[in-house]
Image 1 (cartoon, rainbow, N blue to C red):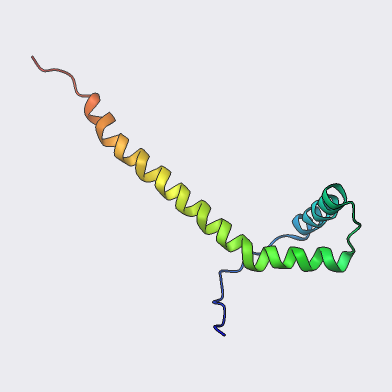
Image 2: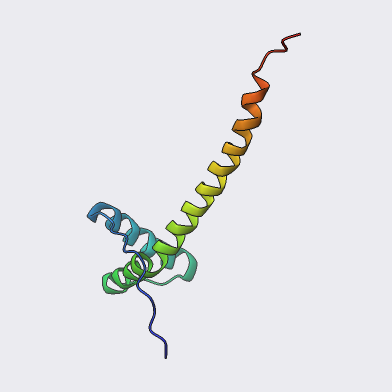
Length: 87
């Protein structure tokens, strides 16, 4: 079996972790009608933090890059729009 590559680690503050654990707990209660313990909350949070957050972060960077490059393409044409007719 192939070993998973290590993704960039994202670190959350204690306040962020506390908020996300509360969100996980509320989700389980609202969506599944189940109470989820603190250990399970922490395990799910660690899964998201270590495995899923880097993928989402990298996707956001790619989206920002595409947006920026598109704006740069427009900038050149917008720049030439500023020229005055010399006739």
